[in-house]
Length: 305
Ligand code: SF4
Ligand code: SF4
Image (cartoon, rainbow, N blue to C red):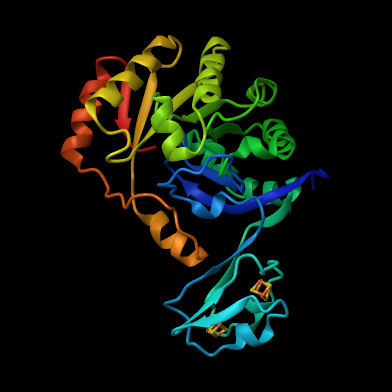
């Protein structure tokens, strides 16, 4: 249909999303992220390459996957068949060998026209609800050539575009993408550099500078703060974040995204460990207190996407 040639690594396309921007949307998740947040809700998004995921609850312990794997990457450990991530080349052979449907590939290379074919299916819903398309991750700006082509095609199709970003990119890439983006969902983990570095693996210096840039360019931005108990949910941290957002002048909306534990099960399926503490979701009373504190600084504050 569109004849575009660019391709990138996609790990999910979610239709009828209502928490990644206005209206009914399709969210396209691009694989790969430069941050390593210890609470990550989508740990399958971090690695740029495809990965094998195993649902142990479906496994019937038949051993067919281990027999078929030419790389000898699957070994029996106790009563489980586990994949050695260093040996696995993500060929997918074990998926075909598994009659129990316990193994799955996360991440596949898709061309722009393939992504757009999925996206355009719900055009009617976008038009009726004021929705559109959101590109998320991982960090979608990491695949910025692919993202640019997707956004360009969306604009040609008259679709509203949103980009959910960590803000960890170069000013040149940010500017390039901002020209094609109707709304940024900008994830701000912490304005404290020590906390940011400790829990995400990178300094927030580039991120805060890029958020300031977007505000100076008068881009449409909603700041989203993941609320992770013990990391950034104390009154001091939240007040500092609110004051920072208020200093941006053109940014008027802030959403709090409460930590949830779906990432824990995903990590287990990937055979990974987060190496951080065991977090619990925040309670609603506490979230309401944080909303109250933030409303002293920012015009619109809500919980959720
Ligand atoms: S994807 Fe290929 S290399 Fe990896 S475990 Fe399965 S069969 Fe082995
Ligand atoms: S082939 Fe599937 S069901 Fe059999 S051991 Fe491997 S993962 Fe389990």
